[in-house]
Image 1: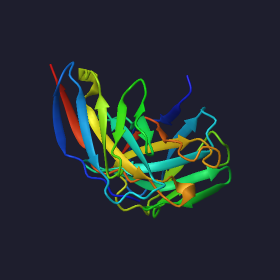
Image 2: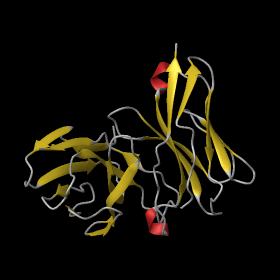
Image 3: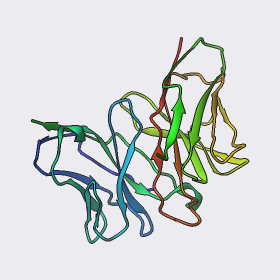
Image 4: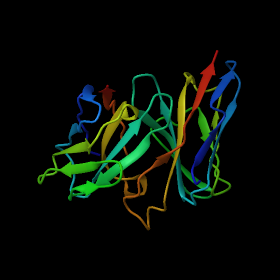
Length: 112
Length: 116
């Protein structure tokens, strides 16, 4: 599975867009990019995932570069409740011979 | 609402005792997983099960056991053989991956186990 690299921490002003980067330069052609977030003492919450194309849902947008070596998660209007650790994972699920490796993520602090 | 329920949220045990953590899902998901999270670290896979009555070891299965007698339930037993059992334990599930190859994992809210 591709290893991912994320900044350990980021700050964002409330109401502004939060752009969280992720590098996955060793990603294979069939590996997806997943984003999760975890608020303290809770389970990780699924946000979004994609393979090649940009994706958008009610929570966020995922922008994947054309070479697929990096991606950016965008929270368009960050609120205080978006303060959490954000995990970027590149890989396959288990029955496809892969596993999702959760690293240490990016700790996003949304400030008033 | 569909979801994954882990109970209890906090669990305390004496060293040398086995303890079983509950995980129930009503999402009709085929696959279920157990992870362990230690402070400041990512998640590590303990066991996973893709179908009833079948399960596979993950990266850190030693000292743990599981069963999958029902689709909805995947209990984890932390045995006395686990050397460092104090941790935050997370259960997850996903749709049958043969039908939806990129189905994401959905997590419960965890059980924090403290062994003294």
